[in-house]
Length: 449
Image (cartoon, rainbow, N blue to C red; front, side):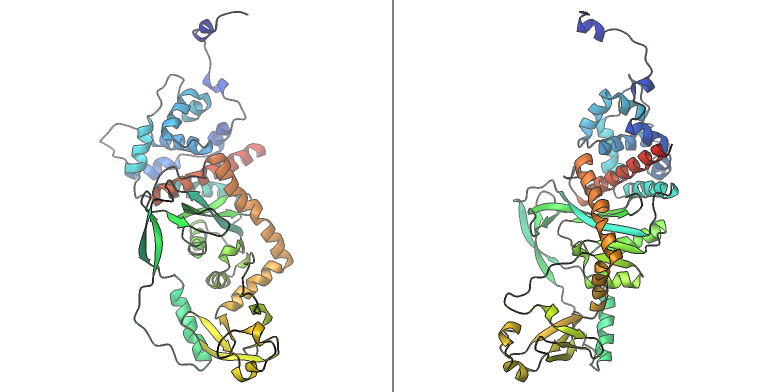
């Protein structure tokens, strides 16, 4: 009863390491139901057959998985945790007295051997394919959103610089639509003009130049990265995760990432549910072209105070004109290079209108209403949102993709970037998403027995 503590600690004991790990431990489930053999084939091209000391790449990646499973942010700390945690040693196949691979081995492989490779994307894809093989992914209904990762950079240390605005992928398609619209209205094609590179001023961090400065309403200003994530309806498996700087709009990479999933995994997407940030004409047109039922949240517009909002003007599709609140017609005039049709009122009638002060403040007393050439697709998406099936579908969005973000931040340390640079932020996001998927697969299959 009063045996000294030191004597107990120095006693020899014969134990099996397998008996020290609880039967319901998460790592037991992962070890049983996740096949890691593909890692060896994926990394084989990056290893020399004759030179250097032999190493176990699967163990190195499994060490990294432990760090992401349990939110261990430092590789040095990960090494210490594995030294003292029996479950971690059992998962890696180490005995109690076996030395743990040094943290510098992980760092060197990540910074040097796997630099400029797609190994982390390949690992993520393979885990998704395993979920598909277990019939845990439907690929019919997808939910997408983005969340920020605070960059490892001081928001007060930056330089202002002018950068070129990237040409959007849909510009060629839009130019064609503008020419067709002008032709159908009997207008001459727009003259080709010299391409003037549009520029904008941005803040570039001096600490991490790859990140972007995010300044949004009701959100803290910071340098950050954005994780653009897509989850499946069936078991909330993450099917895509893509990182951009924090100043890239949510809608920019969406369609290209949607196409990647259909090509990589063979999804036959029937419906998607998105946040209001995705309510743009190109995305609505893209969903229509892909025959996908889109449900996108309503975006609140802030019209000029004291003037009629645009919805007060009724569009007559058959006659292609707008009718103002005073029952006067605004007829088509032209289609701009940006893809907007302009509908203008008669200034003579407007000058005598009793509602003039509530309608326009233009000096020539003429009201102009614009309508995008792809506006009909946006209107269709708005109707989808108000339909019974659209309301049910959008209700699931917060339970799927937003729940996935919450888990990654609370349980897996995705609030902050561990390292600096876009490539390293992508590595963190992809491995975190892969570990979340592994947990779901292992837990589900363990329940199924």
